[in-house]
Image (cartoon, rainbow, N blue to C red):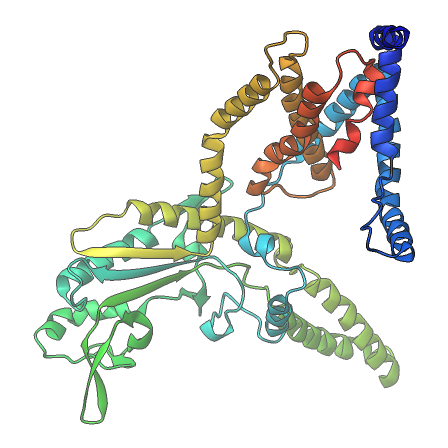
Length: 483
């Protein structure tokens, strides 16, 4: 009876209960529980198994011990760990003012050291794209463009007057697109890729002049090149017509029918003087001849040749470093301006094609930023439902932290868990934006991922912890629950 009374007295002693609970927690954290092994195993095998298990759990137990001490220290100095992180987070969040959104699909998804990038750079170093004397076989850059595919609405022949009239109307609307940049209006002719100072045109549209004769069979369309019967211009039907059915006769390929018309609109990606190798060869030779003639009258032939080569090399490096003497604007800066204008033109192009309507033709289109547009639409879709998602997340966090026992119920802890996740996300984004990193759409999921990792320890500490423990012993096991 006396032993039973002693046990009851000990069980009702609050200090003893707290002490025993703390000891149990420490044992659960630090204990290396090694199984005794199967009774059929040899003693040597059991001993080696225990050694291997202890070695494997040494790191895990060490981390648990360190995190336990960290949680204990945080609980004893809660003011510092509330005020200081909030102040640091506020300072880091100011980095969001350097917000720069990145939507280039190649930058986002292609490896940095991809072989395709290296090979393309090598090709571009030998076959430079000059947009003032544009040649399609040198087109390796990812430039701005708009590509259109036109089919008849009845899925029939496109070599008809009614269809080509609509194609001409579409072409006129595209060429009439204008963009405003820095108080100036730019037309398609200002931005297009050129050859001999003329925009690269879609030669297939010249067939509209003789479309009535093509329909009645007076004029036959040849493939792959059709010579205009009036102007004798060469029209590349292989590039402009699709779904072609040929009727071979008399050794020549005659187009019997065609199901589609293809149009392409190329936008300059840099200025006329982008090919620095042309500048270097042009001006270095001119300067060398100039300096040679001037210096030969003052110095000997050896000295004049030396000075001439040195001065021409100096001036060539200045010229090809980005400046042309007649235009004070740097070449690289002008190239960036053209890219921005091309970007704006593509946006106008996509808007036009989206809203284009016709009773005769169906239009399919593609631009260099089509993939970026689709990624942006995905981001906008997420942003539209972001408010509802946050409301559901906050409600779920608060409700799951509530219990029928009002002493153990902690709804504000769930709310603070959401707030801490948002603060951590903003601080992290602000820091990386200070470091110059761009923002991408998939980052919108970061708060939910952070909350997913922080929420289980919150629930464990609320529902699994003892209510009679001091704050230090309640919070101490929480940090290593994140592991």
